[in-house]
Image (cartoon, rainbow, N blue to C red):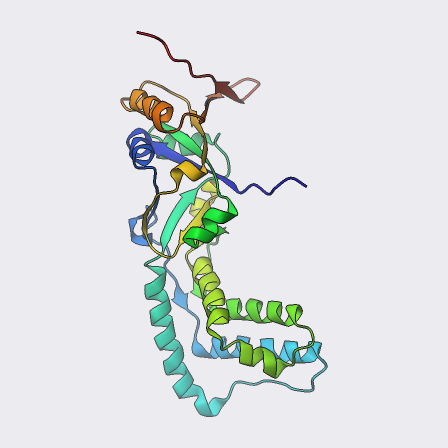
Amino acid sequence: MPAFRRVSFKYRSGAAALRSLSDGTAYFAKPSELNDSLEAKFEPATSSQFSETLAATLTDLAKSRKELIRFEPDESFAAEFDLEVVREDDHFKAACQKLGLFSSARRPDSQAMWAYYCGDSKGVCFELEWPDEILASYQLMPTEIQYSSEPRIHNRADDLRLALLALGKEYPNWTVDAIEKHSFTESFNQNWIARSMGRAVSTKHTDWRHESELRMISPTAGPLPILKHILKRVYFIRTDFPEWGSITMLLHQLYPSMEIARVQFSHKAPLVSVVPMVRKLIPV
């Protein structure tokens, strides 16, 4: 069976492409640095929504194990629990703003993306492949953007529910008490909270749906020295922009095995074509 390929495409202006190729980096931006003013903005669910989701999850696990137990939120601790949830929500929102976000696309032949992010096609598009070892080394999390026109209410308990149900499926002989006890371990909490943060910063308004964005999330923002490991091909449309010559020179010097291809659009068939290019050294 062929290995799974995790591929995405990054549209870059001439200046941005030149900087990335020169540094050999992929830049993971803070949410505040991106062009969506609502990036990673959300309101946490109420403490009652959190506790109701958790109680329903534990009840479902008990039912699947034929344990005659029903879980209900403990009203006697409601005020104390509310303060704890608010404290954790504040910490969660602050942590989300420190994540590094790398936005990319599903294909290299979007006319709109060439216009928006390459300055009317005066730039290039990187084809990137994300192997498992790179994701593991830098703790990167791939995710797909979800688009919604609804108010953004983020219930962390929804992610806790998924993690608990997955744990129950993995250990069908565990009692609900054993599952609940395991949920307090550090490794379990780190995993579901990381997934919840990824979901929280991967929801955008439907106005952005045309971008069909794929996103890679890093625990911290900033440049990562990984471009030589993930860059597989460079696409271009035009060559009449100032950085083109320097880009081709850098590709020859630093990325000698890199493939180059020209994207061509037309009003007649074929509407889109991709033509691989061969580089040749010309003696002077």
